[in-house]
Length: 314
Ligand code: 3HC
Image 1 (cartoon, rainbow, N blue to C red):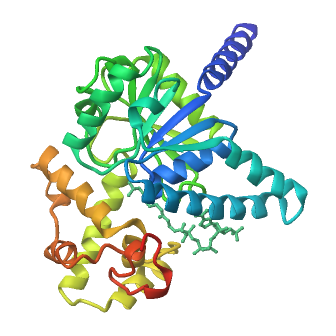
Image 2 (cartoon, helix red, strand yellow):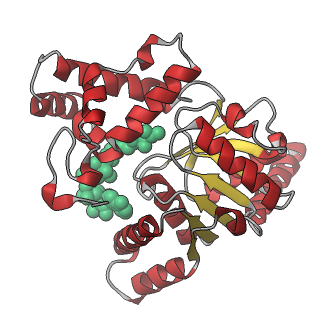
């Protein structure tokens, strides 16, 4: 008993030490995921730099973050001084940059949340690998690309893992932590401890297609698109059926619009290339048509539904 208590104390202390070790976080990408990760890191006491090559995107992400932190503050503290303090302290920990290389020079952890494209991710990490200190851990928030393939661009295979968040990051409690065959246990422990410090519930997963959630979730979304394409039911009835029949917070088509049709498309495209033998990731023709028509979802005002008054990125 004493032995186990000693071990528990030691592992708790190790975990706390590792969580403490990650203080400076650089998030690359200021889309819905990158901004959400940067926001939660700032809210939970980390010093954060959010990077995007596009200064306009950075400005829009800052606005979304400010709005979202206010919602979180209201939920936590109501309307008073404590809420104001939480918002201002959180925002004071967040910086922005358009220079990815310069922004990793004092990072303990770099979380990449850019477009789902292996070549682009590898080019980015290869540059960052030369600029970041030796101790810096690299992680990708990819939904579809094998972490080990991205890590190949660096000389820090042991300090490279996957951190897969869910949208909206400030609300969704889950974080999938992915260890490749080369990720060291110390790295896995450090990013797990950091995920807990971010307030997330952690699950661990091998570097497999879709990890745990998307392996089930993306084929489900694709099935719903096929139902619509086959005119089995209207979009509204498909959404209502799933929402009420399964007690999900959103119907699949409205959720696709919320996540970004282009995001799901890119996930499927990368999957098809990485895992050509898995039929569940085949892209339905309607999804292809929506991409060619530029119906990328709520963020640009049109997807399965129209959102002219609620454009996020317009
Ligand atoms: N920031 C902060 N708080 C937010 C927020 C945001 N961006 N969005 C919603 N909230 C909070 C609100 O303040 C509200 O708090 P309250 O309960 O105290 O009032 C609560 O969340 C509910 O928000 P709303 O009332 O505005 O709206 P809904 O009740 O419709 O909830 C939703 C919105 C949280 C998005 C909910 O519809 C939902 O959970 N949808 C499903 C999302 C989902 O499935 N995500 C996973 C996608 S898979 C993924 O990301 C993986 C990728 O690889 C594809």
